[in-house]
Length: 195
Image (cartoon, rainbow, N blue to C red):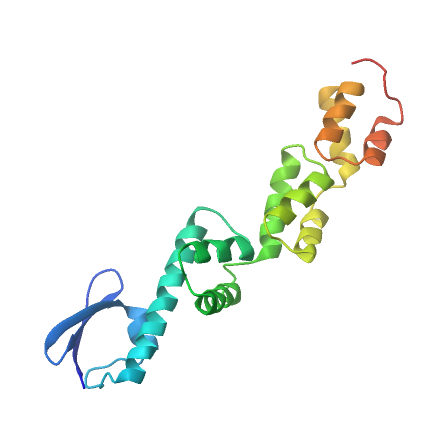
């Protein structure tokens, strides 16, 4: 059975592994640590399985890390990215759990951030609810996102002041997902007073 004869630190968190005095592989340092690899350790089948499992886990976390580098993603969207990269369901679930535990994946935070951004762009609660749900966020996260917003009526009033009263503005608000009751209340029930 091959034996680890040397571990040599490389750049960028990598470790060169020698087996029986010959170069074998360069592995991420976390794979070496988690698999319990050390000089003098025999790499039997069981040890190699652990190395392979840890390598798959590290690769899944690297895929997730690259995806999260550009924007915060919901758990479902991140799971889809891992699936696209052919990460096994078990490894993906383990990686997602680790990322959630570390606070890097948080559907409530994603929902709040997205809801605020959409509200600032003039969207009503129904449109925001639909958008958050389509991004894979659950009902609790969506509710938390909507709860973080100013009341819909206040947001509608702000848009009415900016755009002016009238049927055109009412249609605009309705098209942006503001509820009918909210639009009527924000207008004070007076539609059709100029366009």
